[in-house]
Length: 305
Ligand SMILES: Nc1ncnc2c1ncn2[C@@H]1O[C@H](COP(=O)(O)OP(=O)(O)OP(=O)(O)O)[C@@H](O)[C@H]1O
Image (cartoon, rainbow, N blue to C red; front, side):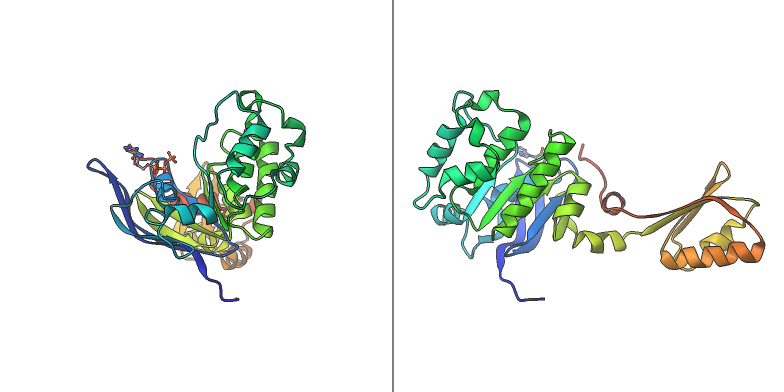
């Protein structure tokens, strides 16, 4: 693997609101040109973390570096290299797409030309439309354009596809891939497992303010209790102990005449051998790979009260 420099480094980040700890010692590093995902239940501390990365909140403890600089102490320089679309971003409803692009371009000393950017994001025929009249997907595309207008090295996208229909969500995924392919590092907060599995090179799973896992989606999946789920209806009863003892099996359950095993590929081979030896047939045999959903549910405890 080629050596890459972290463009974002977060070390021991802590942040409380009043007496309530939101982020409790979070550390991760994002390499240049990665799409790095942050996943976690509601209230896990994801937004607080990316707000600290964007210099919008001051950490109580720990360090944050973006391109080697402190986003709070060096805010002006960091905003030149970091573009952000943060949760529930809003613009004044009367502002047209063109006005919003021109306004944001004026914030930067060396902005991107907004016309090709608007074209790339499919906004050219909406330049005269007021923000309030845009669809959810068009608003999100405008926010991506605004996050990119300063020619950033890194872009922070917080729950970008929440509220979009499946087509618009897939279109947005393609846009995010294009953004990365154009040389921008992406820090993406998401609730959607499919989105993280499809887009992210690596994912930090945050639960109750802490990083509980950090790996590629494939690594997270293979680290879950049962990376392969096998289920079937046996033609004759099998001893539960015998199934649980099969190689790689981490859980075995029987319900309404149907057996479900969590295991590995090796468990499938061993099961078929066992069935052949016992002369038992497996009706409606299904073998499915675990998904990032399974890994996530294994790792996290659910929303904070
Ligand atoms: N401005 C604030 N004032 C007080 N408490 C806050 C504030 N912002 C967040 N919190 C609390 O901090 C915790 C972490 O919130 P945060 O928004 O960072 O979580 P999140 O993982 O982004 O959640 P979600 O997925 O629901 O957006 C929550 O308990 C939340 O209620």
